[in-house]
Length: 76
Image (tube, rainbow, N blue to C red; front, side, top):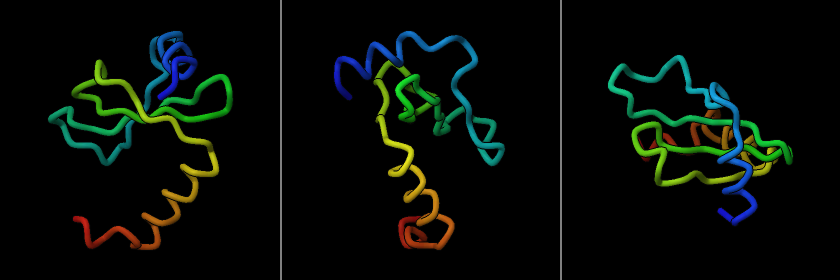
């Protein structure tokens, strides 16, 4: 994450972060938030103070398609 990414994330309005409806009740979830520069921030809901990874929409789309195609099933 760059300094400009950190500034964008810090400026997000409350309620910007979303998590999957498949997330468990323990709060250990992946959260995503769209940023004003058209990138997407991804963080651990249990440790938001650790910052976030920032991806382009194309990068996130490729990851989601790969997950749907089972490309990462061996990691589960």
